[in-house]
Image: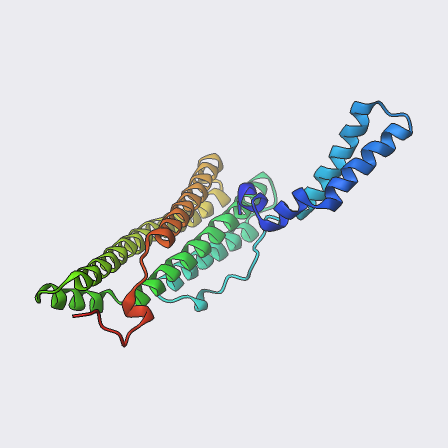
Length: 257
């Protein structure tokens, strides 16, 4: 997780506005003034204590949950398995590299690739959630119902039912487009990760440029993070725009004739 993601969490927000945190700031500042510190210095010490308490609430930059590809459906499971496999082979290359500057550099890049695997996992989770939501929308049935209603004349109630079904179908189409696009981009990024593993082997024996490899690792992590953020935004938009699907909530109820 990026520092921004780890900072903007409920735990940190509570620490920022906690009476204990603010109380510590005030108590330390007052105590400093009482013992003869200049006011500015006393306040500064109080702020340091306050910042330390808030900083302690920031989650550490590690995996917050175990990566388990088997909780996902295909093709998301396969993408996560591919990322884990590639990272494992990268680490084996690092362990087989002779001790020295090249190995130290590869160890550093291996740590960065942890971020790539984590992002792949988070992307796959969101993609799997989108596919599950698509299944709940039941757009095929909505399309059939829409065709039936459009083929027969009706009043205002039927027009409202048609509009609802059209909105459901449009929502499903948007979600399908996001799912398809995400799968394509994640597959491309998986291929790039595989390429980095092969090039790491070259670097380990002195036949490759560790600087170029490092730049490409950074670019891969950034690309994955960008994809995940775009997916977050798409999911948030879908949560706002997706209409209530009458076929999901009331499968026994048909729109008025």
